[in-house]
Image (cartoon, rainbow, N blue to C red; front, side):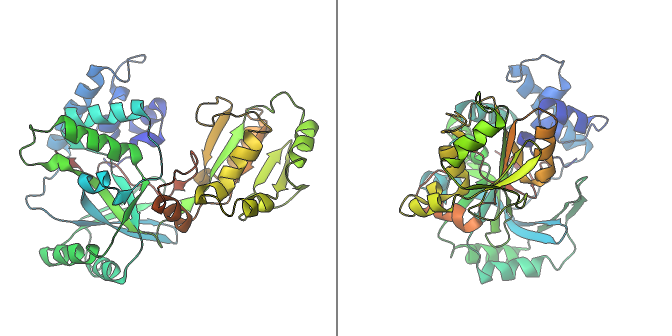
Length: 388
């Protein structure tokens, strides 16, 4: 039943993943896959289909409703990497008050979709990925609970193992006490989920006697276990320039040398052009921005402001159809393939943003550049659901 998050696959990809599997949670999170091609993905029938599919899963899977309030541990293992988070319901009031901090702007149309999904299903089916500065007290609770056999243990097709434990009453109390010492929680991945949950709460005001809509479903991982991969880019054309002309224009702004690693260090983005990797030294630009907001000093921001905008005429990276974003999990080979196949003219590989950098931007109320963080591994939809 467990499935990839709804927002990392297209409709056609979701349809392929769920093919032949009526229990796949994609039938709930992407219900348009069960409607004819060409159906309006935001029509009322889509949300009605989702509600029907969830009802069917409750009966056929079957899903188990926990009779008592509890917290859970959610562990992900990917190769040598392991991260263990505290899963449960978090306060939307604290989100409103900026105790749960954000670093990303949301799009109204995406909020509209998930808000309607939640209100129709009366359930939150997508998990918000949170992080916080690690504490020994929470680590101790997690370590003790994870020593027992898990409640759920799922090996996903991508090799990531997802395990869930239900905390005992004593462990839940200890976790709540330990978490009381955490002054701030940060949204890592799931800004649209939490923004939609806040809107669903407002829409359901007066119709939710249990007040469950005041909370959102999340998993909080310590920052020292949170893994961020780079979010790379390709550009379809060189804005009317030939490759030599583009290199010449780029060298007016930065030192550029042929060669260097495909996965670069901080301050030296890698560029793939006409079958060759190049190293772009943006260190001087980063040093010049030392007094600026933390987000402006990131390689991804310098790439956007000084290269994509000035040299490749990409005014708005969020809407320019020439730009494609490539998650770091796909590796540098995906960038080479895009350029070598002709689907892109140039590709850029970046060093990953660190959790410290992300938290520093959030602490100042800043906004990260669009598509600058790729969190890996991803939580699976369907393992935990919060009814509202």
